[in-house]
Length: 276
Image 1 (cartoon, rainbow, N blue to C red):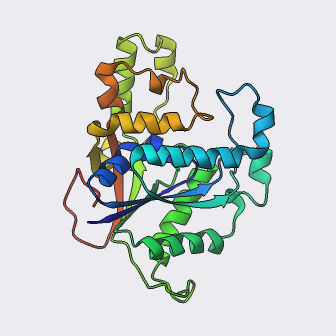
Image 2 (image 1 turned 135 degrees about the vertical axis):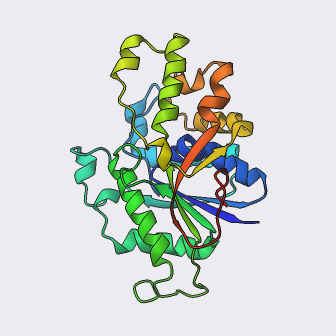
């Protein structure tokens, strides 16, 4: 069996962008590992009546939610890198010298290199250069993930530690959203009355051109795993969030496919439906 490492920015990203993918490969017996860069401590708190009291222990809450999310996906191994959430550009969290966005190159890259050498993934998933939607932590995750993919074999900058051995992953993927598929889904939502005409018209689709996408994973079988994974992040998703209220006839199409760009490949690969 193969090994897959998904490197994400925050607790909850593993479920939103790669949930059915992780559930599928875990269910098929592959080794699936999630590495989470930040502690998620700069986000809002939903579904609690006392958010001000909870903020001091938000990082601890988010870690427990991540563990519950991974359990829902069937993922048994994860790495909590623990960098401070950077918030959005222009916020006080983003100016914090300890946040992930402000880290120097070698510390986070070295930590991810250690994770690569520990789990020996055949493929690494991270984000595209825009981080999917421009969040600083997502952009930094792209930078660190891409750098670590290539640096894992660099014994000059990252010497082997005790009991380590060199490991070079074969493939690097960027998780992606197809603009074409997103717009098609929004058209379905508008036609079904789920979103208004104003909401439909003001939407500027993020994501990648459909022709740039190399792999589309069909995880329709694992949609409920993904929904339960997202629900595990109770402090992050409101109970009435649209993703929990998708009509049954749309659920598989909306949530059951996940897209990837093959950024680099060192080995044989010829599948448009499979990462490993």
